[in-house]
Amino acid sequence: MAVSNKNKGYALRYFGVLGCLLFVACSQPAEPPKEIVVLYTREDPIIPDLPADCCRYIDLEDYQQVSPKSAKTVILAGHGQAPEYAGHDYAYVAQAIAAFSPELIVMNSCYGATTDILGALIANKSEAYIVAPPFPIYQPGFTYEPAFFTGTLKQKLQAVQTEPKYPLLRWKLNQAELQQVDQRVDKMSVKELSKRLRRVAPALVRVDFPTEFDAGGEVLVPLPPERFK
Image 1 (spheres, one colour):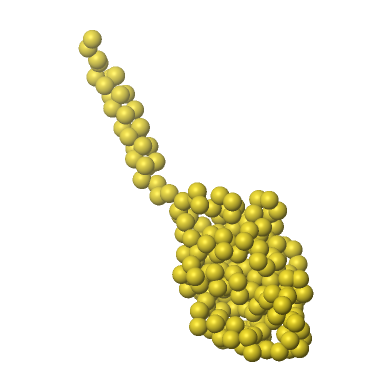
Image 2 (cartoon, rainbow, N blue to C red; image 1 turned 180 degrees about the horizontal axis):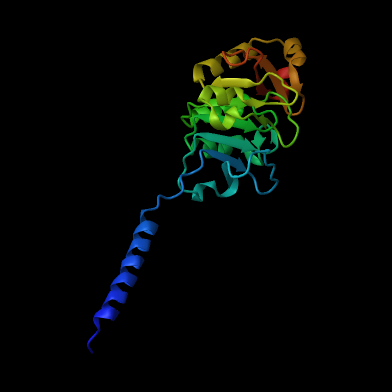
């Protein structure tokens, strides 16, 4: 059947518009992944007070199914009591954090500055900077100043605070420096260890750990009960 010139014109305009729409739709870049990932447990979720749409929220139980695994900052959110953080063993948590290859780690978890989780992060080849509390923190955790979302790496490191402000561990993960902490604790008497207890069960001993970012920083070393006899 013959097609009139008029109908040919309509068809050309229709398919031309459709082609343009398809080209625009296909050429739109995918939404870039959020630079901040919040890892939490769905069994007992504690979510930090953060601006809307600032982060990807990923539960620890299913993190291995997430793609892409990439983030400049990872916030670990949940109850902390060595050797568990956010409901999981420290080795599992460290593996989950390191999987995203962050340059900054925030332990939004009580007693997050404990050598078990710090050592496990290093064992997973992380060379990130870390902010962690050597004490309990109130829910939902840290306060995040504006520079945390817009500043340089070191400005972000300083923009994580408690309310009121207390010294925190602000440090670049380093195996040799962590080993020195263990060596110091090995030389401590039972009396000195007892004076330094931050928590009794499980026993966590505080050790002064000043850094260039926070002169009042501390780390916590978990010890077995027999070390106090």
